[in-house]
Image 1 (spheres, rainbow, N blue to C red):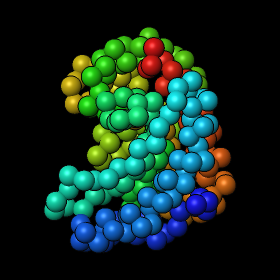
Image 2 (cartoon, one colour):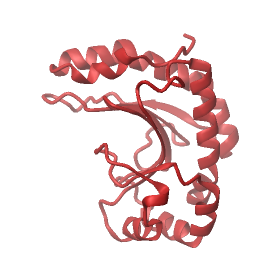
Image 3 (tube, rainbow, N blue to C red):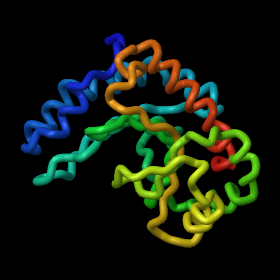
Image 4 (tube, rainbow, N blue to C red):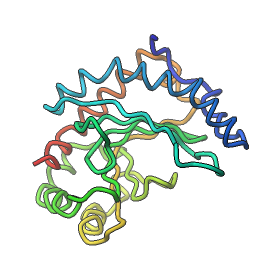
Length: 205
C-alpha cells in the first residue's frame, strides 16, 4: 500500500464511543497507513540511527472497556518490543499528530540515559530547534515548546523519578496540509527523526 497521507476521518475516529467500533476503525483506517509508513521509512531509520530498526504498531490488546484516546506506531532497534528502549513514535490523538523520540517509564536504563543527556545538554539545545515540542507524559496531550521548557529540570526529573518520562519531537494539527500529502509527510517525518537521531545515539551510548 502506498502512503497517501492522513485525513480528518482518521482523527474523527477518536470520537467513536464504543471500544469495539473505535478499535475496528483504527485497524481499518489507521494501521494500514502505519504499515505503509513503516515500509517507506524503516530503511531510512536504520541508516540514520546506525541500528536495524523494526516497526511496532500499538494493538491496545489489554483494553476491555475504555477505547484508546490515541494510537501510534514505533521504530525501535529491538524486534520484540519498544517500550523498554529508546524509540521513535508516529501517532494520532483527536486533535494532533505527533512525531516523538520517546523515553517512557518502562525503560530500565532511564537513569543512565538522563545522565548522558545532562552531560550533553548544550549539544541538545544547539541541535534541536526551539519550536520542537517536549512532553513529560506520553499518556497526556500536554506538550510545550522546547524554548519554554526547563530542559535541565526535565532531564534531572527523568534521572531521579521512577515514573518520569521525556519525549521530544513535533506536533501537527489535523488541518496541516503536510498531513494530507503522503510524500510531504514522509519527508517531514524523515527530517524530524534525522534532527533527533543525535539524541538517540547519545542515549544508546
